[in-house]
Length: 146
Image 1: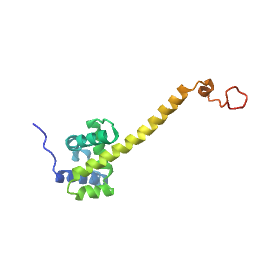
Image 2: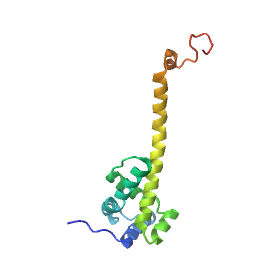
Image 3: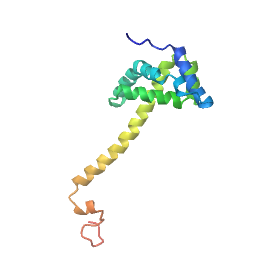
Image 4: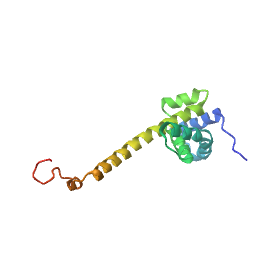
């Protein structure tokens, strides 16, 4: 039997419980993390997957997107985003936007780091100078750069 989708009000109740937990130390068993994760797999992850593929050309895992959605929901419980999630007519669409932005930002930071390393390796492998590998600054040890 397919799982029914949470209404906007059910999402808001979950977000409120996450916020209340940080104040009153409600036990994890009182917050339906598993249910939210399943809802994120159905409501958020497919749209984020399509957007990230279209915008940056990267394929992302649906379960990973759902996990990030849970983190974003919990981490934003005291941010202005939380307030907008509580009042917007379509909190699922706004949550999808928040998650897509988070993943795009992370992707760009990760690619930049990985890209720099690849570029440096390419420069090193293209060089015929043995000294480059040893970190020496001149070709013959004479103090001159050739």
